Length: 402
Ligand SMILES: Cc1ncc(COP(=O)(O)O)c(C=O)c1O
Image (tube, protein in one colour):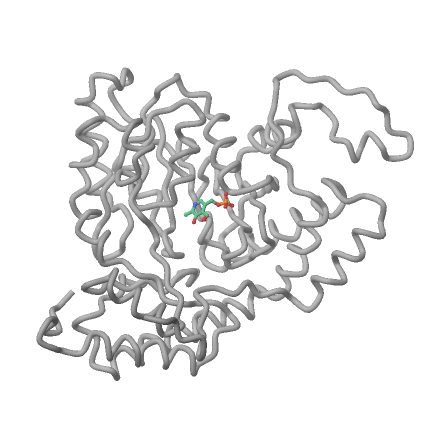
């Protein structure tokens, strides 16, 4: 079948604020483009934004990506090699890769089908499994990496309790979080992403928000090779070329070019979030009006949602997404569970894939519909109208409930 080029509804289009271009120019003309004053200003402004929205994590350190934010935070925990770390299987593979790269063992947590995120019950089940794993020397989980999938504000405190873990062993993957209730609670680290598709897109970039002053200090050095003084400060008037390295670090810093874009984007974020919420309401109403409420299931909502994704569960997902693509409508899937990815299977215990049955039940029905601030109301109506046509009862379908 040939693709219909018009009307085209891309799955995602990153918004760029009016001030973004001028911000880039400002940095290009400043004579300093890598980590420096723009990063410091972005950190302060983002920290303030998160503080008002989420009850505050006093320290914020930018890094190259959310994946780096997760890995560095995990390394900073200084767990024993091979320590068991709980993680949903239904998450971005890179988040589980960070656990592996930090030298630990990922232990999969199943999801509650209603929210698509772990529940205290599924976490408790995974923690009990750790106790039965011969290779897990500690006998119980050492840490948990939670994920606010799609922007759903997971109760990480409740999950930590179910795992028998204190807040200082909780790392929140809030890649989908900015704009929602990000990082409530005194967790060790809340990790953010500024990847191109995210609510606060820069293109690439990440950050760690934390209550832990020692973690923040360590991250500032670890993100730049472990040097005691970053390059910007060394080149300031009166600065010195001298530095020391107490602990060999990483190359994981954000640049001033990125930070300047981030600062401009942050100004627009509240308006973008309002638009995302309005689009979600429109999808909800349009799906109801099209009589799809029984066939297309949406995950449970909760106040503080960041509306990063509009996820649905549909029957015949692969066929539906291919047909939507033919109609010029982009979709995606968040995510292929990691236990279905070959490289990850090799690092998991043999019985891990069998321990997440609810994840397997939803995995083949998950579909993410277009959702971004520039999406028009008409585009939402078109997506739902196409979905309704594809899901209408016919001899091969019977409008089977999802
Ligand atoms: C849930 C989740 N965690 C982590 C990441 C990694 O973010 P980054 O690309 O900034 O490393 C992503 C990015 O897609 C994500 O969706």
